[in-house]
Amino acid sequence: MIVVHPVVELHFRGGFSLWPVGEPTTFDFLRLHGGMSPVDIGTAVMLIVACNDVEGLFPGKGPPRPAEPLDGFLHPLFTTDELFVAGGMRITDTTTGVALLPGCCSDLNEWRDWLDYLDGHSLRLDLGHDPFPLVEVSGGTVRLTPDQEQRDSPVIETSAAGLRRLVAGAEEDLTGFLRSAGAWAEQHLPGRSARLTAALGRALDVVPPQAS
Picture 1: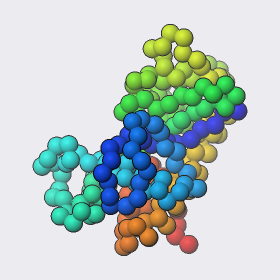
Picture 2: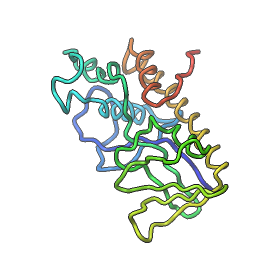
Picture 3: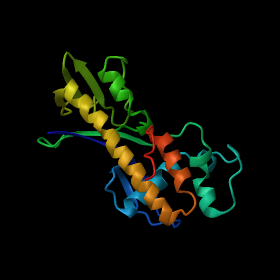
Picture 4: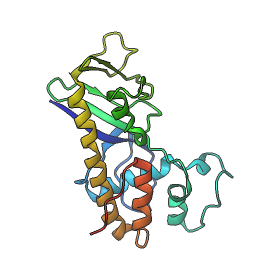
């Protein structure tokens, strides 16, 4: 069976204390969906904000940062026009265990590019590098190579129509994450929930769910 999950790159150092997050790890991916634990939601929000902290890398860039620690940390998410989310779509063949993972510099915000490519509206799909994943469509079949620079790289083959349905369905995971993140923010970021959800929606190219 083929499964498709939106994921963020889980790569960060310890020392974060503004809200509960997971333990630091060297490199992995965290799936975004509506059933995440509060700690995983907090970890995802922290990672997405950190992805856009250009001022932290290049002091003096962007508008002035608030002095208050919480607002200062969230500042890039609220003020950056074009947000970036390190990650993408993780596609796994659960029968063989083979998985195509986002490469370095792959942006989850561009997940709709998969739909354009599978619909024939785009000739190329940029999935990052190190590894160098490759997606090829021939007729009604899609061939997924996790690392095209690896001579004996395993592959995943599936139908183009089926993969398109799975990628489109991943929007439900992203919408569920936004809904859960809004509820999480009510507890951990009082007064900032609506603004956070709107910003995350822009970052993930998903319309935030309407509050009930």
